[in-house]
Amino acid sequence: MKIIDILRQDKVTLSFEVFPPKTSDTYEVVAQATHEIAALKPDFMSVTYGAGGGTSAHTVNIASELSEQYGVDALAHLTCVSSTKEHVKNMLAQLKDKGIQNILALRGDIPEGGAPASDYRYAAELVRDIKSQGDFCVGGACYPEGHVESANKAEDIRYLKEKVDAGCEFLTTQMFFDNHILYNFLYRIREQGITVPVVAGIMPVTNVKQIKRITSMSGTYLPERFKAIVDRFGDNPAAMRQAGVIYATEQIIDLIANGVNHIHVYSMNRPEIAAGIQASLSEILG
Ligand code: FAD
Image 1 (cartoon, rainbow, N blue to C red):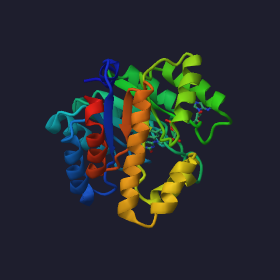
Image 2 (tube, protein in one colour):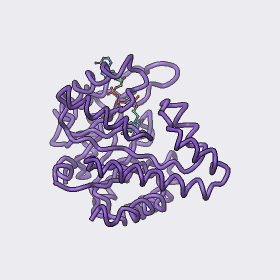
Image 3 (cartoon, rainbow, N blue to C red):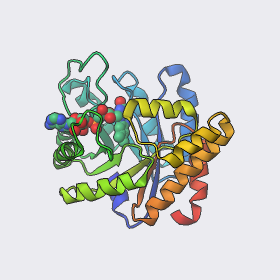
Image 4 (cartoon, rainbow, N blue to C red):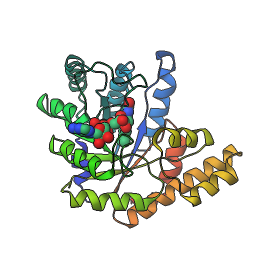
């Protein structure tokens, strides 16, 4: 099923994410985690794409296992930052061949040494190519706090509108830890005529290392309430995991209560975290 048709239904949706293994010898570990998360029967699952495309075959395989073996609709990520048109054409042929209908079209992060030679500069160009080469449902990324490279939020939203006009049918947000940031963002994009469904991306932060990585990479705002949790439980892995799952769950409940119906959990190949969040929402999800 196409993700857009799932999002158009008048219901709350919960989706999870897995990332492919970096090397083939850990494929089975990821396949097992995927299997356990898929057994929770989320509305759909996304499979990320390794920067540089070196693990692209794993993304295609895991996405196709999701739909073929577990009956869960799959959203395959695809980046273009170091891609040629030929490589994209090849990836689209593989995805079509495996019956995958949904693609999250991304630029990918620019490597430290600068942008590599590529046929693409921005995700909108990839969106156009995908739409012209098959009957795919295409989504894109968006940034409630603004993308790190953007001069300001208004400029980022202007380019986001171009991406949607290029054929993006839905958007998934970067993680955020203060829901007011999302509400403000939704107001601003709607005002600029971006009307496609927005899926709120929630990251359950379950260890201190993760927090350091998040803040150094994306500069995401951490509310005082969140920092207090890290200060108090950061040295106790089990307590931090529990508190992180509860924080994410409370964020989700507040989002749903305020009319944000589509929630994507960055479940990071951790079935127990996906299951913990889903169990706490059982009556809310209906
Ligand atoms: P774009 O939409 O191209 O935007 C990138 C920057 O360029 C923004 O600052 C934008 O404002 C600006 N811009 C856009 N168009 C123009 C223009 N015409 N002129 C000037 N500036 C412009 N990375 C991976 O490697 N693999 C993944 O699987 C992956 N999944 C992700 C999933 C989500 C939900 C999110 C939020 C991010 C994901 N990323 C992934 C990270 C993503 O690739 C990076 O954040 C990347 O830096 C930007 O990608 P984008 O598709 O948003 O780029």
